[in-house]
Image 1 (cartoon, rainbow, N blue to C red):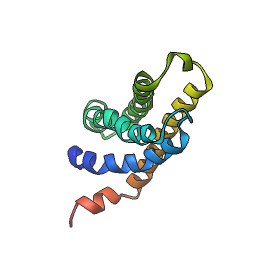
Image 2: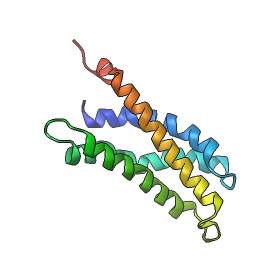
Image 3: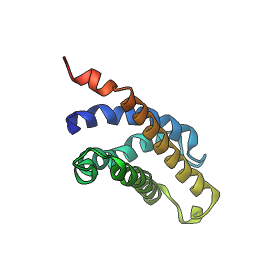
Image 4: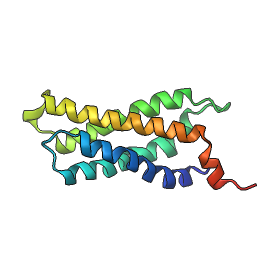
Length: 133
């Protein structure tokens, strides 16, 4: 599939999976508007790299996705945790329960969207939508 088309479809799917987890999972110190924003914004920061850049660099000529999956699915939650903390972290919260709560919610959201994406990929629904004949 064309990676740009995959981006256009996968980004809203990823947001639909991750945003509710962040709405429920981020620590109580964050207002709901920030939780919703985080669900859209964090994915916007990492998803293009994961979908457009990393496959070209990390998927082998034989189509082996192992290295790609290891790197991409480590990069996304680590980068999103760093971005979130840089934007909304407070020195007084560093190392405290609320910080770990927030970072855990971000990792959980990423793991869940990865699992959903893999399940959808195994169902081959992308091909059914975009390949005729």
